[in-house]
Every structure is written in structure tokens, then in C-alpha cells.
Length: 461
Image 1: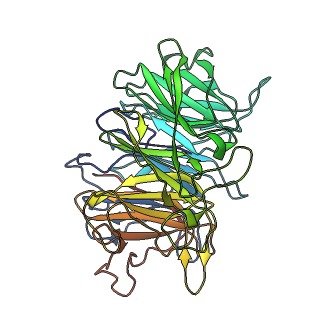
Image 2: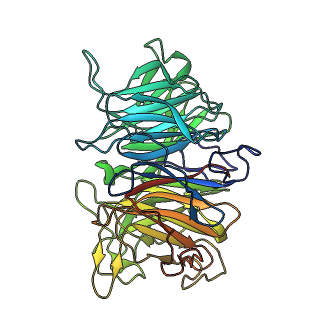
């Protein structure tokens, strides 16, 4: 569910969404010969295409001619290690073809020498700051004599399991700046599991802390003494979306939870938060407002957008200095469960969701991607300052990757609709599909990149 980035005021866990930045393994020779690569997972084999990790030249938007990297039957989500030397890939989609394979890709060699089979599906894995260890949440893993659910520790150098922590139904993870603590979040739970990574092999690593409201993610103070936990609230079956401090010196909640709420033009309080991204001192929080114990509550008509969808989602800007929401009215975005967010060039905030309201009529096409213009005085394309664009594409958004040093963002969208996931190239100077000179008759696409794509990562910058 949740992932985020903190740049200045706080540092976010390695599990979070990261802004594109410079760096990477400079001077590395790659098999494809491409300097700045994007990895893209394709989870189907059909015709001449095979499942695997495809390589794209992210400087010129061209697919590499090399064979896709083999990483299981149905590769989906990826995580890049902090040192950018490896990419971790999970293969599994819950179907009869799912193999639950976890692969460790050597980025320079463009090969996956290490694989292991997980005891179930995962939607969350994080990496230690020194890039030595991966921690994987497996909510359905069987545990003898206890409820199912574990966090598995994998040594990335060898691909071997170094420890297991029992955390019932653990779904999502956040990791502290120093890597000494993991926070585990389970569905339909008001507790946070605090995992001491140094004790994960002993069986005494986990402390359960109650007092939250369907927590889903966290970020950490610079000294790792405090975690700021995002409560999903009503959208996840609880009461109210909020931020709640957790003191990691004594594993106890601190102070009151701060609501993530605004008021719409019907004077109804709307609260939501399922994912976040922090840039400087501002935290952007997205979610779909729900009434406690009921369904969605923010009418699309309460905003400025014109759409055939009945209910919409909400974006809030949160001031980390004052610890309060900045905008007084909801910033209206698509509905659905928001779990992807990234800042592209020119202050364009890309927000992705799944299971949103799909519109496909002669007058409107609408899916799960929203683009918010954070610039205070600049109109880009048709988007005014503080405005939101919903691109005319259907489907869930499963991957967002801004490309550093270029005003573009790669977006994987289309899961859940017949055509499947496609890679779209958005121009962040116009908030429209890029006119790719390598495929002039197909704006926003890469020639020859055909499959059912799920995730995208820029591995060199």
C-alpha cells in the first residue's frame, strides 16, 4: 500500500518511493552497452515475446536488442538497491502460473544469478541502507502453531535466508534510515510490528505496538528515534486518516494523531491517506475519502473536475514544520486505492491508483492516473497552477519512474483492462504523451515494446 520519499526534513525508509537523482554505478560496462537504462517487467509470454525484465535506453526511448532477463514466469514489482548494483524482482500474480520467485538481478551483467522461491505472494520488500540484505513481507506464509505471516531476511550477496520474523498477515514494510528497525503493517489491524533487524534470526525480534488506525506506512526522523506512521483510517476499514508519532526508544505512540482532512464545498469533512511523498518540507498525501463503516464520500462534483465518475480521491499537501494540512479544500484526483506517487520534472506530481472508476465513453476516457501541477505560477499544457489532469488512459497504474535529466516520466498503466499494462511516456512540460521521434506514429510509446508490463525502474540514475 504505501511508500514514500523524504528528502530534507526527514529521511524515508528504503522501501519508499524515490525521486530520480544522479549517481549510480558510473563507469560500469553493461551487456547491452546502454549507459542509462530503465528496466521494465513483462509478466506474460505470447507470440515472440517472453516474460522477463526488458531493457530500455532511457536517453532516447528505444528498446534494447538484448534478450529479456529471466526472472520467473510472471515478474511484477521491482526494488532497486541503494547502491544501484542490483535489482530485486518478484514473480507472482496469484494465478496458476505464479511461481512466487524472488530474483536478484546483477545490473552490470544484466542477469539474475540468484533465485529463491518464497512461501507465498508479496507486495512489499525493502533493502537495508548498505544494500546487503532484503526484507520481504509474506502475509500468507504458514507458521507452525501461529497465525500465518512472516518477514523473511535474504542476504543479497548469496541469496540465502538469514532469518525469519513472525508477523501475522504482514503486508507492507518500512525501514529506518540506519536499517536497525523495520515497521510491519498488516491488513485490518490497528497495530504496528516493530522488528529489530539485528535480532531477526533469534525469534525475539518483534514488538507489537497498538494505538493506531489501520496503519499502512511510515517515515523516520533523521536520528531514527521517531517514526511518523500514516494511518489509512476509514478507507482501510478504520475511522480517520491521520499521522501518528511512534517513539522507537520505548515503542509507544506519542501525542495525538493529526487528521489528514480538508472540507469540500458541501462543508463535509473529507479525510484520506493511503500513500505519500515528501519533497522538502511538504508531504503530499493521497487517498480516497470514505465514511467510517461505509463507502466513498467525496463526490467528484465537489471539485472543479468534470467527469462521469461519481466519487473521487483526494490529494492533501501537509506542512511538516507546522504538522498540519496546507490546503483547505480537497485537491480532487481519481478514486481507487492509491499506492504510487513520484515527482517528475517541472514540479509535476504523478499519482497512481488501482481499482479506480474506469470511464470509457465517446466523450470521456479516464483511468487511475492523476497529474498535479505543484508549480505556484506556471501553467503546463492545459494544467494551471494547482490544477489536476486525468490523462485519457484506462487501467490501474503499477509503475511510475521519472527520468533524470529529461522532462519525461515513464508510467505503466493498463492492468485490469483487456489491453494489459503498457509503458507510456509523458512529457512533463505539457503533461501529455511524448512525441517519440523513434515511433512518430505512436505518441508516448516505444517501438517494439510489446507485452503486459507491470513495473519500471531507472537503474543508472
